[in-house]
Image (cartoon, rainbow, N blue to C red):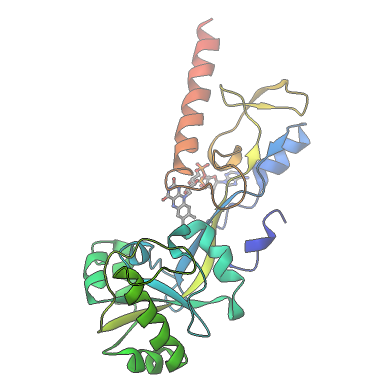
Length: 251
Ligand SMILES: Cc1cc2nc3c(=O)[nH]c(=O)nc-3n(C[C@H](O)[C@H](O)[C@H](O)COP(=O)(O)OP(=O)(O)OC[C@H]3O[C@@H](n4cnc5c(N)ncnc54)[C@H](O)[C@@H]3O)c2cc1C
């Protein structure tokens, strides 16, 4: 309802996160905010529904769409790149890495699970990669040749990506990805003691909200999300609510 840009993507959060806190709060006259905010993720393995992880990209990997072409600056961030991938034909793509990136990513449990699931395909060269992925060979060869130039400083990426950790070289590995919605970041408006507020700014006696029930700290859309922005308000606001209650009771 509130995040149409990612509503068609795979939902990868808790089955119990269905908006009950908003329903309960609104019934009591609570205000809500940042309902368009969410954490997306651009790299969920289509086959295994495990997290491929964005370390693949940050170490120098690229994302190709179904036409075998890159379509943006992948380092924009895994959350905001989800909606960008969702808007591509077929709403899916491939993360392409090489042996060096693969070895670095094995330290991540999610990536390891993706590997164990058999979702990674390997090829010695770009033609082999095209055959293994079903992508157009010419497009794959052109894109990877261009990326090698960007990483060596011989050309500038038209999408503005300026961080290619190393030059992608065969053998290549590729994982088919789909965009995902992990969780939304909007919720009930709270004050500095985690008390839920009405639209006129007054507090609803006895009602507190934290974490997924409260408005988040990520601002609007997907771009404000940073790792920790979900768990931090869950812990922080609950701590503030408890502290406030204790003070009130002591008084
Ligand atoms: C795949 C994924 C990856 C994530 N990664 C990160 C990350 O790296 N860093 C980060 O900071 N955040 C991350 N998050 C977000 C983070 O998990 C949440 O922001 C956080 O768990 C919210 O905490 P919470 O206690 O408010 O809600 P939850 O942890 O969802 O707990 C709410 C509980 O309430 C229960 N419940 C729901 N409705 C009712 C009801 N009506 N009555 C009774 N009980 C109910 C639920 O069953 C659940 O047990 C991620 C989320 C997902 C889905």
